[in-house]
Image 1: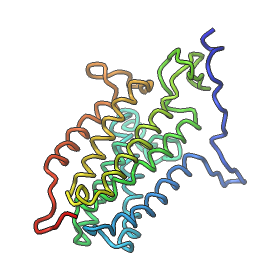
Image 2 (image 1 turned 30 degrees about the vertical axis):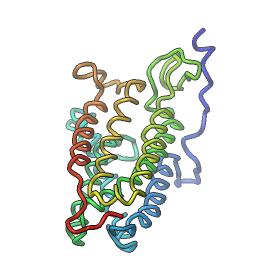
Image 3 (image 1 turned 180 degrees about the vertical axis):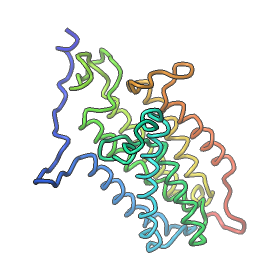
Image 4 (image 1 turned 60 degrees about the horizontal axis):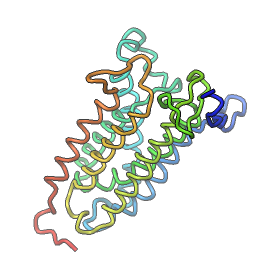
Amino acid sequence: MPTLLAIPFPAIDPVLVEIGPLVIRWYALAYIAGIVLGWRLARRLATLKPVAATPEQIDDFVTWVTLGIILGGRLGYVLFYRPGHYLSNPLEALAVWQGGMSFHGGAIGVILAIILFARRHRLDMLALADRTTAVVPIGLFFGRLANFINGELWGRPTDVPWAMVFPHAGPEPRHPSQLYQAGLEGLALFALLMALVWNPAIRAKRGFVAGAFLAGYGVARLVGEFFRQPDAHLGFLFAGATMGQLLSVPMVLVGAWLMLRARPARGEAVA
C-alpha cells in the first residue's frame, strides 16, 4: 500500500545525447553548467571593491578550479568513502567515468587552487576565496539535480505524501533527498551568499563570505543527511552520524572561525 501512494519517479534518461561513441550525460552537463555560470558571475564579483582579481585573471583561474574540483573530488571519494576497495584495485581510482565524486574532496581541491593561484599572481587569498565560494552553490544545485535524474543518492524510507520509489532502491517510498539538498546547498545557500557578497561592508571583511560558505554548506549538509540514505558500504558511523555529516562538522567550525576573525584590510575604507 505505501508503494501505491508514492509519487512515480520521473524516469529521465541519464544520457541526454548518444551518437555512436559520443555520449553526453546530464551529470556532465551539470558540471559544465556550474563551472561556466560560476565563472561568468565570478568575473563580475571579482571587480567589486575591494578588487580581488581582474576578469582576465578569473579567466585563467577557472582552469585551476576545474582541476581542483575533478582531482580533489575523485581523490576525496577514494580516500573518504572507499579506501579499502581502491587499495585493492588502484587502477579503478582513475575510472572517473564509473562515478564516485566527493564534494568535500572537491572543496579541498578548490581551496588548494585558491592558495596556489593567489600566491602565483600575488592576489589577496581571502578576497579571492570570498568571490570564488560565493558562486559554488550554482554547481551544487545542478549537481544535485543530476543526482536526482540519475536516481542515485536517494533518501531514507518515509511516508510523506511526496515520497518516491527510486528504480534501484527497492520498493519502499523514500525522501527525494537530492531535491532537498538542491534547495538547501544550492538555492538557499546561493541566496545567502549573494546577500553577503553584494554588501560593501561585509565584502570588505576579508574571509567572511568564504567562512559563511563553509559554515552554511556544513549546516545544509548536516540537515540534508538526516533525510538521505547513508552509503550502503559505510552505513551509520560515530554516534549514528553519516560520513557526510562527520566531514561537514570541520567545515562549520572553520567557517565560523573565518567569520569571527574577518576584518577589513588595514587602511581600507568600508563603504
